[in-house]
Image (cartoon, one colour):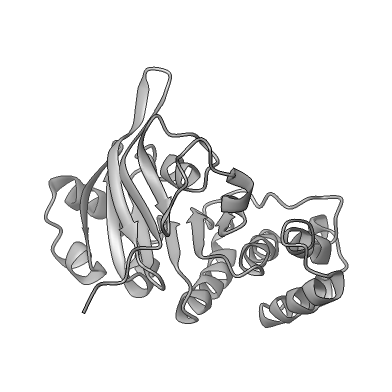
Length: 247
């Protein structure tokens, strides 16, 4: 049987800010319906990698494909590519002047040209699933941090993106709010979503991810099933990282 082509693939990606090389020849692939956890110390390049894959930062060298489209080609329509991706970052990035419902439906209505009635019906269904339907008409400042982050996740998935990029989405939350956001990601993963998630929540990565990638100083030093990476890490930098975060 022929293996299914990856939905997202990076090949020898380099990225620097001034003289500081943040990504140094990173290559990875993500299969459809696969959940991959990207772990590493602060400053290892996780956020930069996700921003490059999401076309929020230009790469200096290498190539990135979404399906069979080379999205690193400067001639590509970046807005059309971003419409195929969903991204959620540490800061919620909700529009403060819009209601929760308008925040969630904006891309559906403006980018995908979906009728407002249809977009709102889908959004309300998702908001109800995550316990936020009562806040549909509220503005983001009425919501807790966990509620704002759940709203941002709903906004990212409402258009059924081909790949969901999640960047340390619990790092700005109070500890008691982390669980509610991770429970939502777990349910999205269980529903068959394709996710690349940078996270420092090691228990979550171990329990939910199909594969773990370890990034260290802009280089992938190890990858594999969570059971092997966490139980018997092969690379000394992985062992040092896990010793720090799991003790």
